[in-house]
Amino acid sequence: MGRHSIEEALFIQPVDVSTLNTPLTSDKTVTTTTLTKSESSTFPISNNVVTSMKHSSAVSKKTYTNGLTTNRNIRFSLKTPEVPITPPTTPPSLYFTNNKSPLSVECLVRARIPTNTGEFFLHVYRNNKDGKEHLAAVYGDDIRSKSLDASRPNESEMDRIVRGAYTGKLRPGQTRSNESDIPIVYSKLHPPPLVRIHSECFTGETLKSARCDCGEQLEEARRLIQSEGRGVVIYLRQEGRGIGLADKLRAYNLQDLGHDTVAANIFLNHPPDLRTYDIASLILADLGLTSIRLLTNNPDKIEQIENDGVKVIERIPMIPRVWKGSLDSNRIGHEMDQYLKVK
Image (cartoon, rainbow, N blue to C red; front, side, top):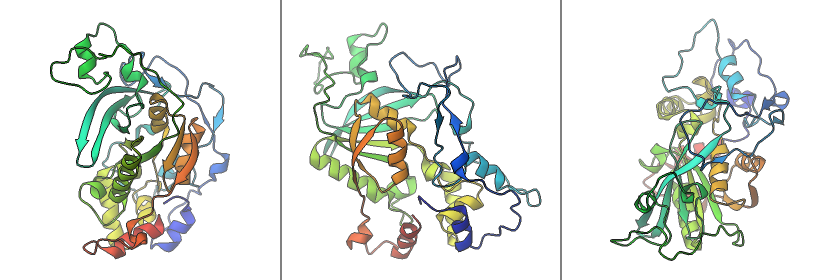
């Protein structure tokens, strides 16, 4: 969706803008303040966490809005006193909470996931921002989570094994987490791995919807990473570009009325894109990955994670199957074409 402006989105779709009486401001003058430490937190989190790499409490940073003004300003500027807009039924985004603790992530558990094309270790992360369980599918034995491997108070060897803080592969009857007694080394000598930062899409991944290519992108990313034998797929729980599944389905109904994805989000009082990648940046840091080769078509994603300290040394484009001439004839090509055109 990327670089659409509000004016473009409203011009190409039949959206009545006559009642919008609050002018949108340019995002180039918007600044925010880096969050500082306070005693409040969403949940008690252990000391084995990876926290935000932004330390200054007075450093201005760019607000990422895909060329729009701030997400919060867009939400409220689109409301009109003449025609009240019913608030979305999905829970409000926690990006606008007043939680002043630095963003932190911690790997709770990992487990081996065998598939018909290979195996990987699935890591489950918690954080103090949105309460969601974000995931990392890790291919390669040398990529390990620092927060998972760290010792925890009063834990036994079986505790470490059950939460996945072991080396090698488990076998029946194993009682030690590190049978080789070789210290874990987080080497930086390996070449930067392939990484895909993917946002959840139930309709595209599970239902194989022809309204998007999200499922195809996830499958292709896994295939490419497995072929190299090393890499990470970070799976962020931000359905519908951050608006949630319920409003995503409302947007689908608006698309059937003739609106594209940008105009449908605006009609529902959302910015075109609410996704952020700060949690993904901290997950990469926890896995010891400071330089990566990123599978993406989104320049905003690159800009955000590089601002957080992750170096993207190469961008590998995700080419849609329809552009390769391998579109499934059972799928609705017209809807996919319209989606890709707007995206």
